[in-house]
Image (cartoon, rainbow, N blue to C red; front, side, top):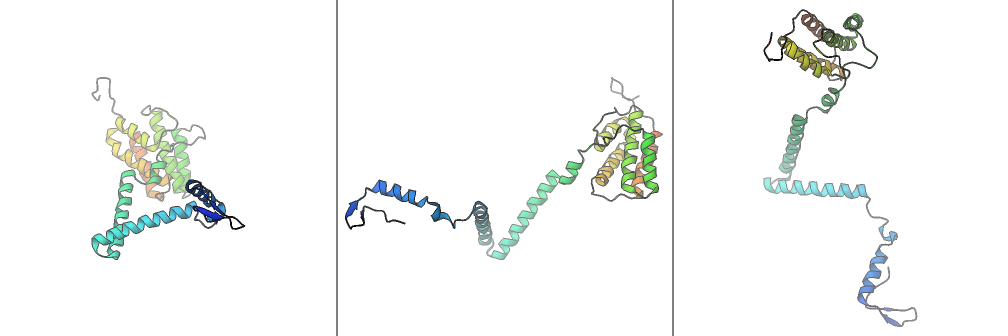
Length: 223
């Protein structure tokens, strides 16, 4: 890099005075040449270096408070774990939150409750418990729609169906909510389906069929 200052020498040795401000500007332009920055760290490396520096500062600060670097590291790990636990408690499991928004019925066209029950029974006979649980839950909800206890509405989730049906059948509200959780857990991979899960939904379906709904007139009192 050329030397900039108050004076420089030409090739023949003749001194030439260069004003300070133009010299500084020329030096700045010279330093913008990419050749001087070939070995500078890239954006990813710079971000990593920044995070490392911040982590070092945090650990050093904790170490200074506790008197021991090892204790400081342990305290930092505990703080991170508490933060993750708080976020998990506040937001819940992401997988469950995303799954519970999926519709109960597929887009393959309407089917009667009897049709869903028949499909569920066939899957159960074959030991296909996940499919049996899904079809039995659909049979349960479709039967409520056929009895006009639920409006036939595409896109309804199991949680929504359980909440709405629980108002018409309050004696089974808790069982309906448990059935919706069971369906969600199995349908979205958090629980393995088995015969007991299928039987739980089958028995609830039969109990609902034998239950007279609670009618709520416009005045607000149950009939």
